[in-house]
Structures are given as structure tokens and as C-alpha cells.
Image (cartoon, rainbow, N blue to C red):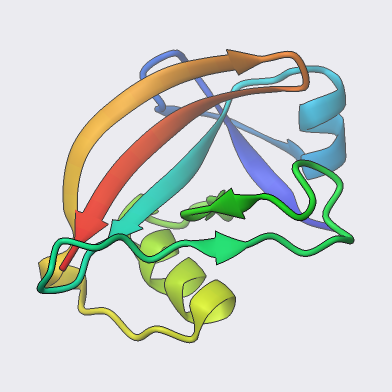
Length: 117
């Protein structure tokens, strides 16, 4: 079971945690990270999502993911880049450029958007 922090509209944890599936079922607000990885030619690294993914299977996407309970968001960027893409990145090179409240039909979250070259 994956547990996540429930957050307020600024992305600040409320002190409550819940199972990821319950968070999505009840549309509870939580943090997610999006990481745009660029090379020296300003090309963006994308990946094709697995056909077994519950949301958006077989679609092209950037590196993104949930933030574990008490995990600093920038650390989640490092973790997800390694888990999803096998890419090692340095924390000092990861730059936050936007934060957005996203309210989709099946997922309400704060998207913390980062990039790295």
C-alpha cells in the first residue's frame, strides 16, 4: 500500500495521510511532481507509459509521480527519474519553475513542475 500526505491548496501537508487509492477515489488533494528533462539540444526526454497502467496506458509522458509521506518534493524528482527512466540526476541541478492546482475527473493534486538539463 502506498500512503500519501493530504495537502492544502498550497501543497502544504495537513498532517493527515491516506492510502493512494482512497485519495484518488475521494479526490483528496495531494502533491505530485512533474520533471522535464532536457538535453544540450533542448530536446525533452519522454517515455511511453506501460500498457498495464491504470491511468493513461500506452501514452507518451514526461517523468512524473507521487510524493511519498514526508518526502521532500525535490527528492521525489531524483527518485522518480531513477525508477522510471534509469537516469541519475543531481539535486542541485533540479529547478522548480511552476506549481499548479490540477483538478481532473479522477485526480485532484498540486503539480510541482521541475526541469533539469
